[in-house]
Length: 76
Image (cartoon, rainbow, N blue to C red; front, side, top):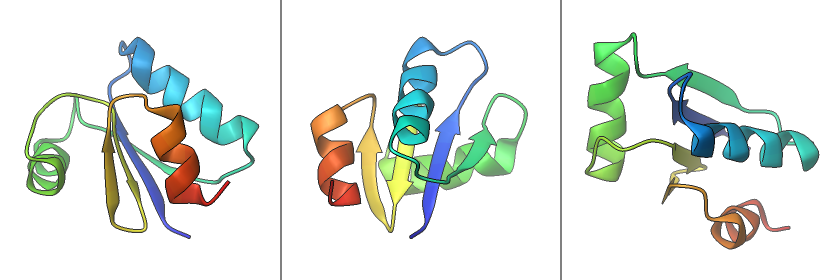
């Protein structure tokens, strides 16, 4: 399973997504878009927007902290 979280260090909703994934014992790659322009471009291509968090679970894009959507994408 491939899980990528596009986030910034100051975003409270980003922290919630990462806490949720840790609680569910899901390993993920964190991408800090506050310091990486290429990562911002990648995130915008996937989600169509610049807001964080953006979570990519096997190609399914979830914008914001949506626990039910995260569970569905993770098949929990």
